[in-house]
Every structure is written in structure tokens, then in C-alpha cells.
Image 1 (tube, rainbow, N blue to C red):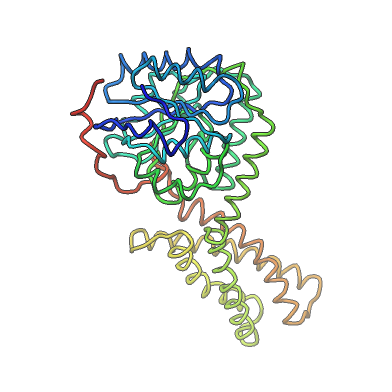
Image 2 (cartoon, helix red, strand yellow):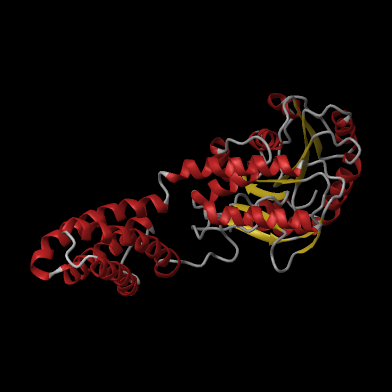
Length: 404
């Protein structure tokens, strides 16, 4: 089988007449010792237990040992195995180069240690071939997963994925599992947006896919930790956190929180004007309740439409009823603050009253956001996808080409 030394000359221009349904990329850096056993094991599995046409690509990224020579020998010896030799280091860079030049319908990758049971490969790619989903990931954190690894790695993995859920609203469970697949059209859409070239590549790809409304399928996997892994956990974790901060900053301007805060600022200004207008006639307590009641309806509707992207009339009455309950909480917080102020000063100026009410309103805003986000407009995530976008048609009639 022909191998290539540069991405531009991949497979020396000798592309098979019929592209494979699935391409499995194995990114490697200084893995000369582990490579032969892993590639032969993967090749045997695909040859005997995989129903679709396939190709294996060893993506060597700037190895300084004999990895390139070993991979080239494997490509010459095993049909369906090819070498993509890159001059620069980085797993993300290797995957970008391999996926960008591939003609396969579905693009996969797995770590060279083959920690994931290969029997999960078919469940991983099947939803992509059928058109049900756009990406698929193996997850070690599902209830049905069977994972063998030390407590340190287990803690780091769970903590990292929890950070993603809290900071980036990630709805996928395991960003770091080295066992993923993507449809070629989805890869063409996402790869130009991905900036990271190293280990954060996976996370960034998934976050951008979620933001673009693509469907992410999850497959519970059996996974055994490789004790000889060369990954620098501390450095990788540090780089990942930097990547999280970058994505958080990039998405901040258009985020739900920013839209909510903008609506909150407008509501607060409207509330302040109404309070000052109504205060002389109604008194502080009644003016506060009246101004809150008037602005609460508009606030709930604006957040429904813009912050949480809820359209149409479905659940409209329910949402406003729940918004009314949140309004009661706001009344209690602001009225309580007003009552404390009048205990301290029986005749405070209107400006002082307003300042106290606005300060209490800030606390009420935090409570309001949490209530709207997780109660009024909260939606359960689909069980097998990060988003519930429309299904796409199958990429190709690959069943007609099954078998190699």
C-alpha cells in the first residue's frame, strides 16, 4: 500500500476509485514500539468484524524515533494501511491534516494504545453512516461503561468534564476519550473554526459542534488505562484550561448570560423610572411592587424570546406563571431590604431608597437567572445527542459497498 510523506502528496496521488465508508486515523508521536502491535490488532478487527469499507491512516506528527519507518513498513505490508507523515507536532494538527484530505464518508480517530475496546467501533460509526448524528464520541463516564484506571486519572477526567458543563454549558459527558468519529461534511464545517492544534482539539471541536446545533451521539465504552502513556497530565490539563478560557471569552459576547444581563439592565432602568414616578402617589412599598409587576412581565417575555431562544406560543402561559413565582421572590427580597432601611432610617430620601432597592435587585437578578435557566426555561438534554437538530440523510449507500 502506498504511503505519503506530506499531506499535499497524500497517498502519492493514488486515491482508490471507490472511497472507503470509514477512515480510522491513529495519531502518533514517538510510538515506534507500540505501533506494530496496535495497527495489526486494529487491522485484524476491521478485516474480520467490520461490515463497511475502511482505511487506516497512521498520522505521524514529528516523531524523532523510528515511528515513521515502522509505519511505512506496516503500510507496505498491510492492505488498507497508509502513512501520513507530518513535520510538526500536535495531535490536533495531525487530525486536521488527515481529516481535511480524506475522501471517506465518516472520519474516526483512536489512540494508538487502543485502550478502548474495538467492539465499540461499529456502534460509534453506525449513527453517522445512517445520518442520525453528525459526531459520535466514546464515553467512559456513562453508567454502562466499564473502565479500569487509577483514581488520579478518574478524578481529573470527571473534574475536567464538570468544568466544561459549568463554564461552557457542555452537554456531552466525556470530551477527552480518544475514540471519536465525525461525518466528513461536519468536519468540513467545523475544522476551519477550530484553533487548537494539540490535546484541546477534541474539546474545542465538540463545543463548536454543540454551538452549531450538530447532533452528538455518545457510546458507552469499555476502557483500560495505559500505564505507559506518555501524556504529561499536568501540562495537558493546564493547556486545556487555557483553551476553556479562550472558548469562554469567544462565546461570551453572544452568550445567554450576556443577553440576560442586557435585558436585566433595561428592566432595571425601566423599574427605576416607574418607581420614581409612582413613589409620590403610592408610597415606597406599593410603588416597589407595582414597578416590579409591570417590568416582570416584559422581563420574562424578553428573556423567553432572546435569552433562552423560546419561540411560538407553546407553554407561554406556563412560562409567565412561573415567571410570576420568580417575581414574588424578587418582591420579597426588595421589600425586605426596604423594610430594613426604614428600620434604620424612618425618613430616607427617595434616592437612598432607590439605591437600596437596586442593590437588592442585583441579588434578586442572580436568583432570577438561576430560576429561569434551570426551572422556567430549563430543557432536558437528549439522551443520545448534545442537540436535537434535524436528522440528515445518509452520507452514501455504504451498505452496497460493505465488506473488504
